[in-house]
Image 1 (tube, rainbow, N blue to C red):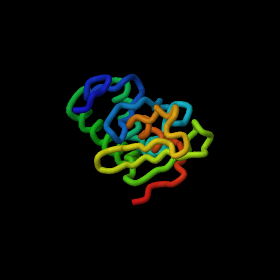
Image 2 (image 1 turned 60 degrees about the vertical axis):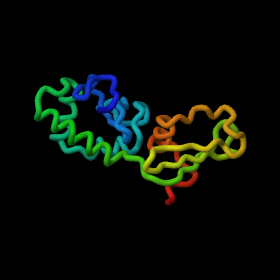
Image 3 (image 1 turned 45 degrees about the horizontal axis):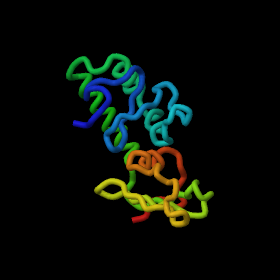
Amino acid sequence: MHNRPNSEHELFSRRIAVRAKGELAMGSVNKPDDEEGWSKQEAEWHDSLSIEEFVDLNMLSSYGVQDEEDAQKLKKLRESYEAATALIAGEYVFECWECDGRGAIEVIVDEHGLSQEDCSDCNGEGVQYVDEEEAAERIDGGYTPLRTPSA
């Protein structure tokens, strides 16, 4: 069971998203765009929902899980979300904004999760942002890597 702000079978009002790591992320159901913090993959997932799935999503977001049928609907939505937004294993390299892009920050995604190397130019001076959760958000949340996944 994952540590979530609410119980396993509850959702906050009209907000739902389950990150690739299984953690609850917040994004408005009605506005899947950058303003609400949705990544491109999340928005595409939202847009791909059938009318029935969209209605289920809104009902679950508004009222939570009421019975076993709701639990199965939520499980199906979470599985499709995770499949659509999962981090792709490989190596990502980002410009370091602390040193105006002179250096690069390397993030590795493997079966153990994420690891990060300090900036090649400023050695991570001021680059304390990169914890595992934020690195995941940067990878799937709209920051364009200099180099995309390579095995």
